[in-house]
Image 1 (cartoon, rainbow, N blue to C red):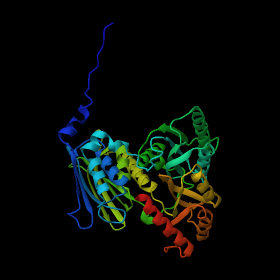
Image 2: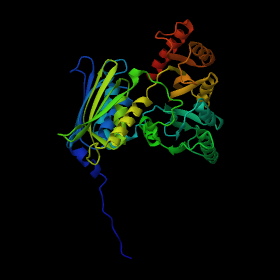
Image 3: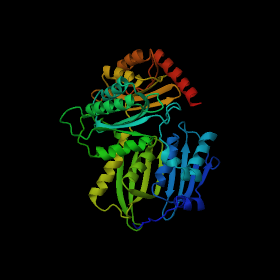
Image 4: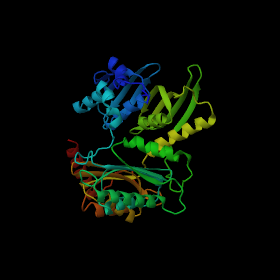
Length: 447
């Protein structure tokens, strides 16, 4: 029998151009008085802008301005960034991480592709199963999901939950405090999958594409949520009975024009500024197979203005009105998915199986619907945050806030972050005291 040979590709060839022309990263605190400049020069490649913005966003840095140029074979970016408090980035660990992740070591070691973007405690890292859920949202759904996990003795080590346009998407990391899956745990996973799918479908005639999927390993949570919603076509509407009425100043203004002389389509976005806004827009354009060649980003007080010069990956611009309309709708959806108008709170407690189920049960029993949520574990401590509305989508009344504080605050540390019914902070002495204590404890977690 004659042997056949395929072509041989040296695995080192993929990174050859990077090793010949390694990326240059500069973190400059001297040029600007009120921000840090992060400059990145490297060989251009598909998706590189998203990778850079992802690294900065995962560090919770605020991008106040940015200038992007990647026309031709070279990628040159300048980002004006601050920390969450509006100060320069002076922490040596943060600066070192930026230089390592965006420099030659990050590109050749895969740091940019493997960062999950959601903190999981050291004890559970590498020993969890990832669950992705998508379906029609309804009051109490998160409570039902977490109750299934608790009843089967699975712990939620980390999670992110978004809702938009009457739909819910979740990425959860669960574990069982075991080093490997045994036969009993395998069977419980099968039972859990069946029960979660039944909960997501809700009604027998529900054909809305609800489903639960399982995998082992990490993913970038925020990007994955965008991809799940995009695949679910949430930007098309069609399930508006639970959609929140956003304030007029939160509505994004997205426009698309043509730059005929340069052969670009120009996407202009004006909206209320918020954290990770640039990441959400660049993520959407990338997942829609558009390449960004030039961009300018600017934040002026509460408002943000962003302009992207794009082409499709095949080199074409946006010609048809239908294509332009789809891009506009997808960007608007990406911006709104992370907008959380309403009462929010953070709570902290010792991590344990059933913690998320216990908290969401209290929310459900008080007639509240979760619009967005996150779970983080640091060591043996769990930190959760929730944005909630009442079952009709209206702001939460103050008496409900007080009732929650009485029920949850007895066993956990509760911090009320926002009260939509009043521009002032709650004046009750007990609540202020609780908030102060929780904030101080979080500082200890970060150190």
